[in-house]
Image (cartoon, rainbow, N blue to C red):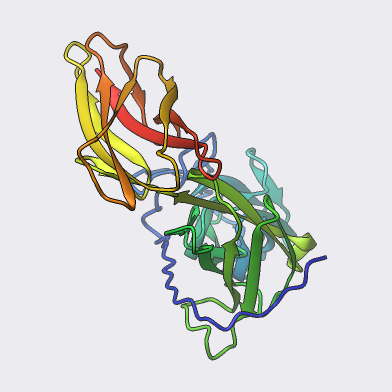
Length: 388
């Protein structure tokens, strides 16, 4: 079990949660698509399929409470409420399921007409399982009746749907390291809109070189809208970091429901002794953006690379390119005479007649360059391109 130290440094954050679902008696809001007896659009019309007697005696449909407000639930949970319908009339009351606003909201009543005798009641359970966070969740299900004075009953459920926790920043947390003399740093926050308090009780990581510190928000500090509790998180990766892209994971163990674990993806770029300049070169990604390339013409890009001197001159050799048709030529600039650095001219080539394809994002092309440096044995360059 690792100790969980407190962190004094503050991390400023902001979050906005907004998703509104609107319902009215005459219009039904769009849901998640329709199914048999499922969600319907605002413009869809329907007629009462039941026969309404023109002469008495008549049934009388009385719905105890057509609106159930459930407060807040966690995204992924299923809510359930039982609506009660009384027949206070003198004839059998017939009920039939009508339209439902969204397939995420389901009244548990037979598709066939259901009869309620005079003086009797019928319980109609309704369940809902929202698919997305919503600041205002409001859904309705329709029940047809043969009561001439109340031919339609509406069962409403209303509340908020929240994730149990939010991580900021979203997605991968970037690990920043500018030089060999600095540790790789990262930071962010973990917050909950549902829990008045929670604890981070332990953590694990994909590397022993990672250390992390936490500080719980005080009520005074927690000024993010709708958040009830949270932690500031700051960590570092010490020791030798491989040159180029690296990815690690940090898993937080909490005392949330069922000992919920929260995994954070960490990603960064460590340039090491290399500094590359040139058009379309993105240093923060160690990547060349070639964009669209005509297969019949190919393309060439030229870059300049400076390398910090460390004893004997560095030796560079292309070890691998993926895809194989991609080429990299490396030329030492013998006229460059600076004691602290060496200079190289790099030429990246997509030859004419190259196969068509897309190499972008996680599937970007790569060039692996080997060196004679123990502290930087390899350099990986990325290339994004679409060969047409």
